Amino acid sequence: MLKTRNQIEIQQKLQKEMGEQGIDALILTNPDSVYYATGYASSFLYGTMSIGFCMALVLADGLAEVLVPEIEKQTAYAQCKDVKIHTFPTWIYIDDEEADTKDKPEQPDFCDAFNILTELIIARKPDSKVGMESGQLPHQFYEHAVQLFGDNLTDSGLLLRKVRAVKTEWEIDLLRRGAKGSERAMLEVAGYMEAGWTQKNIYDAFRQACYRQDPEIDGWGFGPSIGKNYSMMNMPLEDYVLEEGDIVRLDGGPQIHKYNSDLARTIVIGRPRPGQEELYAALKKAHDVGAAMMGPGVRCADVFHAMMEIVWKAGYTSYQRGHLGHSMGCSLSTEEYPFIAAANPGVFEPGMVFCLETPYYSRKLGGFNIEDEILITENGIERWTYANEDLFWGRKY
Image (tube, rainbow, N blue to C red; front, side, top):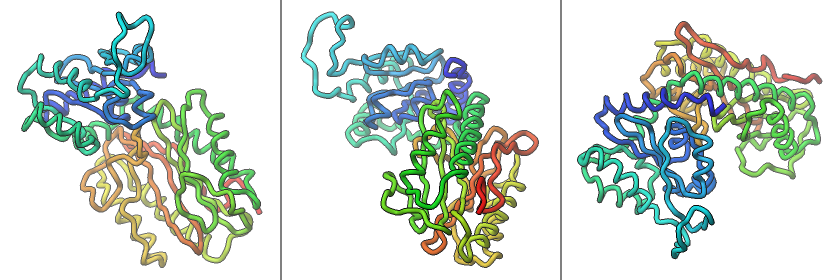
């Protein structure tokens, strides 16, 4: 699938926005940003999260460029097309790649690696205005960039968010497949989980179900909650056992080539307890109203307010959320800009992909969420998934 990635289209989207903002060069340092701009997912950068292990450069014209450690050179050439590849040395010795033996540092000097990109920028235009992801840069790295570019250095966060908000067809295909795969995996798990299961059992079952959905799945993200333990956890609980009337929230999904999926399904074990069905019905009604409103030109804030009003009118007057949905892509945090929120004055545009959600967390009733993935089209929406109408999805009592 990486062979069909539309690298030139993505690069041109970045360059178009750079031109509109007067930016001559874009240096990208975050793992997902480097991957978005070049199609290269660095093992070191994703694995260590050490800014500098791999960097990308997008100039105002010409091909995007990527700087990788020498040990990753073979992979970069195998994964990337229509991208210029540069390398820098590390502590690792490669027998047939080095002319002679030199002293090697314990770890690479990323400022020296950064200078390789700056030389490319200066050679093209000495007084270039340079955009960087300043919010994630280590202080030493940022200070080095300031010394090199001074007042010509600017933050590129808004530029990246704007460009990545509207997806290409290649991205849409990955996201659609991931969403549908997540729904199938959740339905499978919902069909056979039962009283006596732990959160660890659900983690394991969902992981296995995910990898059965698509041969190109290369990862997964999952944050289920069970019973009164509505909190998200990095390590699943093993000491809480599901009981009759417990709510299970399945939330997350598989990745395909680093593109995320994020659905949520809420299911009851056995017969529901008082209040659970009523709460789910209110959340589902709000969810349905939001989905019906979505479309090109519709204000995100209007959808948010309409959904909140439904929940309040159902009697849950203390309910409050910062957002009721988010964009999707290859972000490390899954939830991407733009958001379906009161603070967002923007509108839905064709090519945007959203997760529409109505979460509700309660120590008394459990952790609830109804979440679907929806593509904004020229004439309306394309729904990829459909949340369960009640709490008994895939099961009976």
